[in-house]
Length: 532
Image (tube, rainbow, N blue to C red; front, side, top):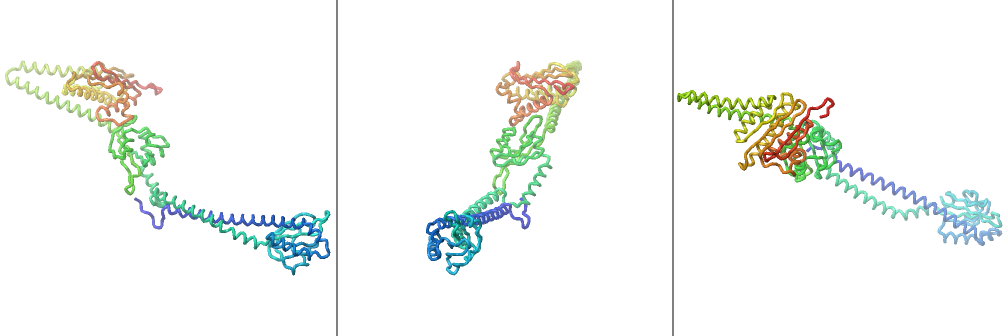
């Protein structure tokens, strides 16, 4: 686990603080905008109210009659004050066309000139504005009093800004309550997000996460083994280039389910069961791979699994060749032991004074051994394959198996000696293991048929074993690709299938005349165009 740098706070806490700041700014901005909008609406509503009241006063027959009298103030002052009180406005001023006031809330202002613009009101239009008058700033409307088409007076109605602000203050508690609820919901959401983020990031800081990611990526790219990291949902989270190459994974593999990648079902099942599997051998395509899987933990909590992949193709080939050499060595050791017994017999016959019988016995044994060697060598000109078959012949004799080799092969073949040894050796070993399962129920027989030239190779291996059921034959050939390769024949057949497919050949499984299984492989040389 990495150590957090001094002064570095967890990413979850930083996100929480940022979200809280954003929520507070948004709520404050929203409240300010709401207040400005309410203030604008309040003034617009006040203007509409002032116009409506002014029009009602200007259209009153009583007002039209009184403005034409010699003393309009006496009758209009009480009327204007009553209208002001009933409508909730701050002033109702009825004036002459020359601005002389006939009414005013302050009686001392009667007779003075109206302060403010009249706009087009003297010409019969309605005029509104915000202006500072004797009562302070106000929203006012000026409406003409028309009699027989002539403007005979003007009516000004206003509402002070102070009154509008008092109304707005009365609305602020509701706005504040809505803002408080919004702020509380935002803070709660930010806290829940931060809590989830803290759990997912394990309380790490941003530099820790960046450093871990960079280091892990560097490690994944530097190791010689293939590495896959999957989460608890079996989705690939990290993969290095070696794993992509060995497992033939697609480019966009991260985030995909493990079951979608065509991996061996045994490996996928082991990961699903959360069990550790070490050094299991699988054959995928042309490669022999060793895969291991182990659950991954963080603070005692399982967070997924780690899968390692190692390429064992070359090692498996070398191991197969080593096994063949060991078999040859064991055969030679057995033959050496048998030759020693025969030599002792010959010496004893000489000591007993029977040299003729000693010469006859030695000659007969030499002819049998030389005849077998001459038969194999004359049939198989390829020296490596001939040596392999001689060893298999001795091994078969030691195990009580009747090995029959038929056909001929020239020295030049479309398959390299190394691959030829892998093909014939594994098929013959598979046949030996098969006939051993009969346990004396039938004769133990194995037949190897060889045919070919520089352009084509055909190998047939028959055995008298229990055979392979038709429904299992496809699985035998596909086992290396689709599931875990079993020890013994399973892995050997997978290697044979890999070598055959690598040369563009075919491997078939049928019934053998000997009662067991027949494996037939054919390989053709590549033409100049690269097509087999």
